[in-house]
Amino acid sequence: MKPERQKRKLTLVKKLGKAQKLTRAQKQSQIRAALLEAAAKVVGEVGYSAAMVSTITRRAGVAQGTFYNYFRSRQDLFDQLLPSMSEEMLGFIKERSSLAPNDAAREKLRFEAYFAYLVKRPEFYRILYESELFSPEAFQQHIDVVANGYQRVLKRAADAGDAHTVDPREYEVLAFMLMGARKYLSSRFARSNGSMRELPDFVTKAYMRFVCNGFWDEHASIANSSPARQTRKPALVSDRVLRGEKA
Image 1 (cartoon, rainbow, N blue to C red):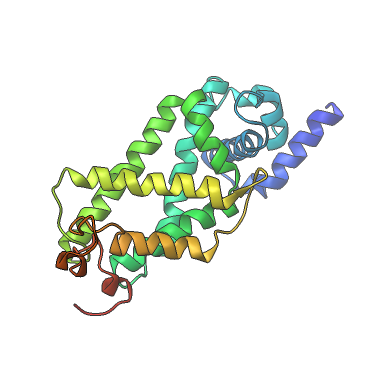
Image 2: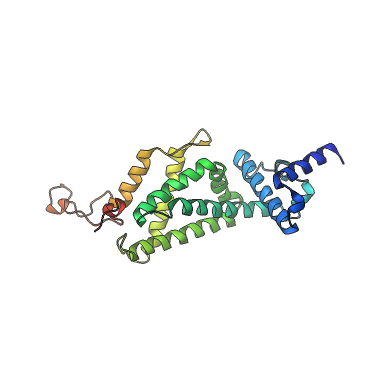
């Protein structure tokens, strides 16, 4: 066996543990996971366009020919990469936010968890935003999954009394507003010189104040002299709910 091939085989065996104790299905599952993990690292470092199959298989510690036992092509891998990471991200957020006392507090934890995930998996940022060009179907699938999940969250919060009931058509609008906030806040406050950093606390505070209280008062007069200025329109989410207080 050639030294390079032997080295790759030893690397893979080391990653898989005691291979003789694994079933064939388990070995295949772990090799596929190793290829996806390697692809995530490579795409995160050099982008989709420069991510070669040879680089990915070398990173995963498998022979290049093995790649095609799991993916039809490099594009097939790209199309499966974002959905795989998206599932991981959503699981991470759910675990971090599941014990919140109410939905407003849960939204704060969801928001913080998203940025914590970016620190843990900085490659996700590039994979997500480059996928719109290099894997548009995967990108749209991710957007649909997250948006639909957020709409269910918003409706559930309203049904539970943790948020104000709105026109059912507005749940989609609100979901995309909240998703958009994450996108632009991550590019401005979480990404620096190509790497991810922890989100400053003041960003979370500003986000939650906006979500819980809103900002503009549509009843205020132009001269700011109307008595209506002193009457605050109910926000989407009550700040008392955020603090865990009873209504």
